[in-house]
Length: 107
Image 1 (tube, rainbow, N blue to C red):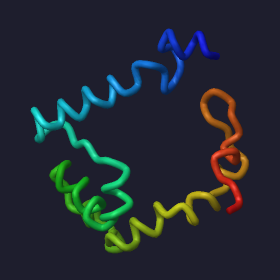
Image 2 (image 1 turned 90 degrees about the horizontal axis):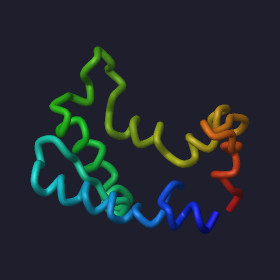
Image 3 (image 1 turned 135 degrees about the vertical axis):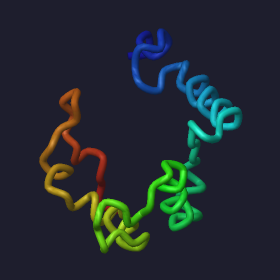
Image 4 (image 1 turned 90 degrees about the vertical axis):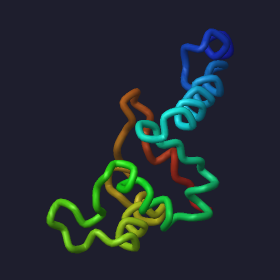
């Protein structure tokens, strides 16, 4: 595992931060085509970030004929509580065969 990490052939190998930095740099150079959002921004300003994504995509949250597309509804659907209770996260597997329930622990 260590050797694979050093060669950069597994997720989060030594080239991970270079990869992230290149997207950050690209987002600063081309704000119309690359949206870079930091975890801290999402946690601190959830409503603002939910509004920011469709704005970047030049879409309306209500586009598509749905009347229940409010920011609050989106935040509720994306909450850890809701996502951890989805059947696929209780019994599913990732594309490489890891049980998805390992990503959710009882606090």
